[in-house]
Amino acid sequence: MRTGLRIGVIAATIFAGGSGAVQTERVMAASSAAAGGAAAAEAKHKWAIVLHGGAGVIERRSMSAETDAAYRASLRAAIQGAADVLDKGGSSVDAVEAAIRLMEDDPLFNAGRGAVFTAEGKNELDSAVMDGATMKAGAAAGVTRTRHPISLARAVMEKSPHVMLIGAGADQFAASVGLEQVDPSYFFTERRWQSLIRQLKKEGAPVPARPQGVPPAPSGGLAEIEPPDAHKYGTVGVVALDRNGNIAAGTSTGGTQAKRWGRVGDSPIIGAGTYASNQSCAVSATGTGEYFIRLTVARTICSLVQYKGMKLQDAADEVVQKELGAIHGDGGVIAVAPDGQLAWSFNTPGMYRGRVVEGGAIEVKIYADEK
Image (cartoon, rainbow, N blue to C red; front, side):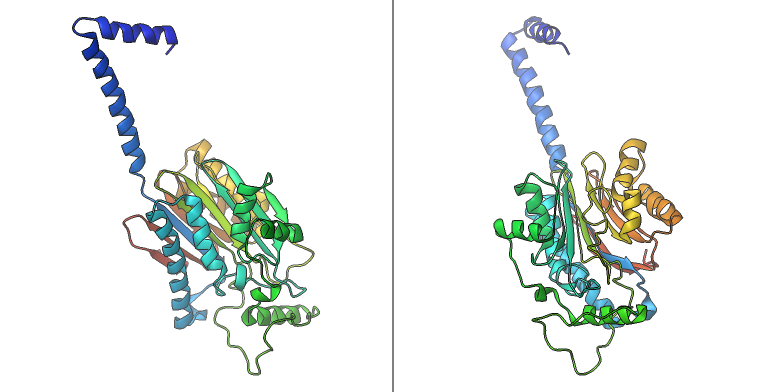
């Protein structure tokens, strides 16, 4: 409404019979009620969380009951960590970081302390986070000393003018802003190391020397707790919706086992493996990163929601089941929208995953046949 017209309407309201003061009070009361209604509507947002711990060849027949239970407990603990943050009024970014930090400390997952090794026998870690409310994002790739890469990604987003930092420089920045640094041996796990050796021997490739500062090799064999390919493309990721209606996405990974030449996958690439916008949705992906990069999977899903008006689940399925499958890519995604829609979609035998909505029970699933 033009200013002059608006003034005229207000004046007419005030002086059209009766007390002007009474009419003015009514107008102000109506405005106050409208504002109160908007605030109440905003307060009605229920927080929500969707989480993944990687996708791959994850099948019941290859998983022991003990391993199955261990993964479900870890997924539940990570979801609960995020839920505790949101329950106290924390932001979606806070919740994403909290859950991923827990998973980075859990050797079951291919992130942080459970990361797979490169062909050179190193752990090179990637991460990203994006705030759907501000469209700000941060990412790190190839870090080797920062205990929590997801916190580094957040620091890049909030404490630097950049979006992505890599390698030693990223670790130096992390140290400069007070993030915990560790010796590279901190990320070593015997199971991931033995898995690397098996793969390199199978490929006829040279096996690197055992890293310095790690425990001696076990004298006996090490039993497999999961299928050999379960974490070949593993990643962890979280998307969240907070009570203010804001969404966020975060992803952290050790990359692909036996990767070479400083390879970087989709996880730290905004729009490919990680994306969030309050105008559409938040997505975190896991799988063979090269395909997710080519399709800009995360952003494409959000574009279908924003510009084509697709339901979140339909958009996720369109990209993962059709477009990704058409180019022989494998993996999956999790997603959340500001209106509370939740989704996941994957084209592998399994994906470690879970979700919860405020007031509801935590759901945790592993295999494709768990609906």
